[in-house]
Image (cartoon, rainbow, N blue to C red; front, top):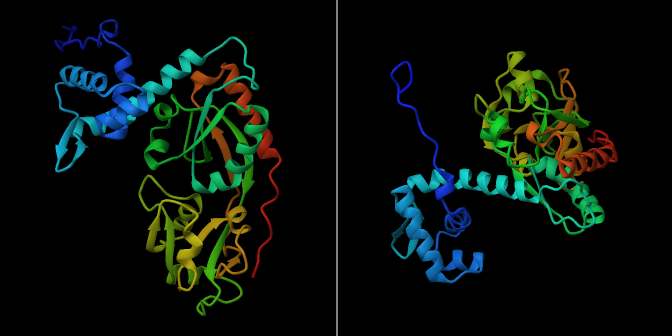
Length: 320
């Protein structure tokens, strides 16, 4: 008991646990099938069935339940999916640590949380650079979510970083990568938008918005709200790449990054226009957990990301 009368929670005694069960748990949660989990682990089906039985006893929960001709995860198992990935990632990081780092011989997996925009702009050249400098290493580009941003202090611990603009994450180490700017997309045949888009146009027209929640928004949309304009979201997506297709052939408008808009071909069916308000620059950065600060592999990887970002071409020019 504590001084205030509350019970003290004792930690799980890891010394009594077989940590190999963690790998079995991840495979079972991922595959949702004993046979497929066994194949993924390179083990026999009876061995994985026995592991599942031990896991069920440990958690006091079935974890996998048959529904018709398939298995589904129990509510507890669903909560364990992300925790298990973080735990396995942490263990891999511990046992892959070395006093020195040799990129030519490393088989390390580097994981970044990114948007599809950052994947298109930075991920492609980064993958090429990593393949050239560390041919045995693996790059994992995992889509980030609003929950990753809100809980960045913990979500970044098991991964190598998150590519995210300033304005969302505080009190974590970061490295500035590149600048971009916001532009307006309107359909080529949108008769309600002239050669210049106005604030009245943005207030009256329907929008394609990227995220639309109190804790998930783009900086440009937030700036619009400070001008008293609440975008009328007709379509909401949680990625940037589909936006031009959702604007083309409609009266909708959207705000996207100029580097992304510069990649659109003449047959995209959209015009790229300057915003009618002063939009501050978009500064993309690499954010990571302080636990990685002195890791030689992570330090090398940060340098590679910075080098690739420095070599990116400009944001392109506005097109009518």
